[in-house]
Length: 156
Image (cartoon, rainbow, N blue to C red; front, side):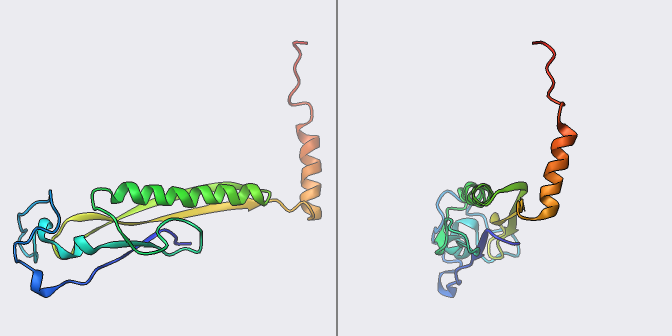
């Protein structure tokens, strides 16, 4: 299941390209060969927005701009919300989180060539126990017999 950020790109304004207008302060003003603008003048980076595409109750449900320098931390924190939700869901429904994997994605801006965090994906696997299932009841009973006496303490 692919959940997490999905970047929403702003549209380029052709009249503001290569005007020398600083849109992203503290970024390089050097224009790389083959690129439309420098990172400081990049309209795409200035208008990049992040939005969550999952059906969970997490941050970034509405598109929001994140400073490119803070995007990595924001994406990691957002994906951690999905992991926390999986643990809560498992605890409420008699389950156990088997695995939780988070991937952070990067991309290259087509306008200025800067690399940026483009989003993240969280994959969780939850095992639910069905106490009404006769096979599960039998497994629980045989496990009890199998592990009985394993906690023996002779230092009494």
